[in-house]
Length: 167
Image (cartoon, rainbow, N blue to C red; front, side, top):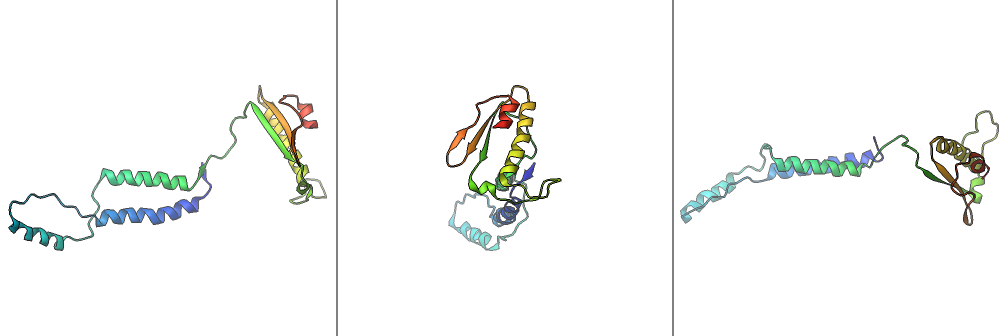
């Protein structure tokens, strides 16, 4: 597993975890106390004045739960993703862009070639590799389509390698 935006998760953790802990440090922990006489209010006022704002963290299930939820939210913010290839689907739609921008020559020359391949040539080469992988899976079929000014299907769903490569 990898994270697509690890910096966002780390920045979020650097900001939110200390804020949550500061709230727990500054939280006043008093027991409710019944008083029968107003004379005892003087002692309660003194308790407020003596109460120190910073205390050691006590084990709290609520704090653990809040840290767990915060950790899950921060992990989601970092955008986790699985790398690698899973099993091929039973039906694959392969679309190739045939617009004018695909005639641009960029990138590295192919092995053994002197000239740089066009984007369309690169797309066709990758499509041939994908067709080989799709048809290697038993019971798989593919559809080849072209996108230019209008989109259209060049083949139907088929497992015939020749017709897919021709399209």
